[in-house]
Amino acid sequence: MQGFSLLEIVAVLAVMSLLSLGILASLGSYLEFSQRQSTRVRLEQLRDSLERCMAALPYEIFSGPANTLTIAGQTVQDTAGSAAGRMSFAKEPSATPWRAIRNCSSPSLEALASDGFNRPWLLGVSNDLSLDVVGARIPYRVAVIVSAGANGRLESVFDATTGQMTLGGDDLAEVVDGIATMQNLHAEARQKSAKVANAYREYFTTRYLASAARAYEIDYFARSDSSGDPRSPLWDGPSPEGHAGGVAGNTGGAAVPATDPNIRLLDALGLALADVTLRPGYPLQIDNSSPAVNNPDNPDPARTLPPFSARVIAPLPGGETLITTASGVLD
Image (cartoon, rainbow, N blue to C red; front, side, top):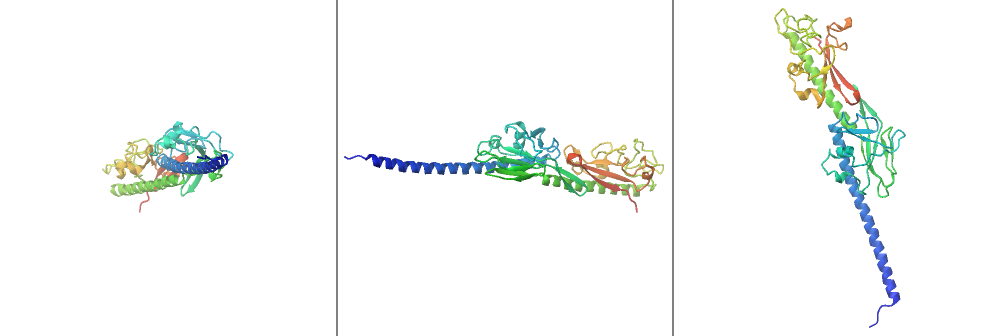
């Protein structure tokens, strides 16, 4: 039996080599496609997770220095800096702050520890930016989470001064700007502040109508003066005419939490705790006796006269406040 010739064997090997190269190329393309798809899925999960962190912790997340995110007491700190508009790099992705971000989501920590190419994520955080809305300035920061793609080279540009991201090369990225979270918080603050101010204004009018004295020179926003003495004839305390006085206490010449038991505001206005609280630890503030409002104890004589007033102060991130005034105007 005649065997294969050397030429035939070489031809077969050549064909097999070409087939192998084609198969390897196809496998390589499929592997890269699979890695990119995995990266996209993980990016979406991290974006959703970070958005949930921002919504749940709007006061804390931007409380640290510029170009950082603070989550659950941990700070995601840029190590390359962003002052010149360069991409910033997060610390090693298994560090606690990254776990804090991932803990806002349901996937396992390991699944989000790196991109689909098994490389650390890159993180960019902007400088402090702001959005002007009715009655307040809302601070926010833009965060970008980036994968350097298959080639492992960062080819994107992040301008930290504007929060603008320009995607380059085969990089993959998600942007979380924080604006929606801050707008929602501001809308909530406006709604709750208006509700409390309206209720306080109605309380003032009701107390005036219920008073036997029914005098314009009495400040019905509180039952005592700033020292806590309910016998002052200029405040809504017990009077010689026999009325018992109101429920709301004096804020003592300053702004105090609406939840302060000494002013009994919830009882006076018939409100629930949720009505005067923006987030746990962030109640609305009430001021019915400081120099900033018209009241009988105001050191400025011009502001000791009616119409008396009170303020509802909503604390916002970045030390900003939203102030709503309740005026005790009587018809």
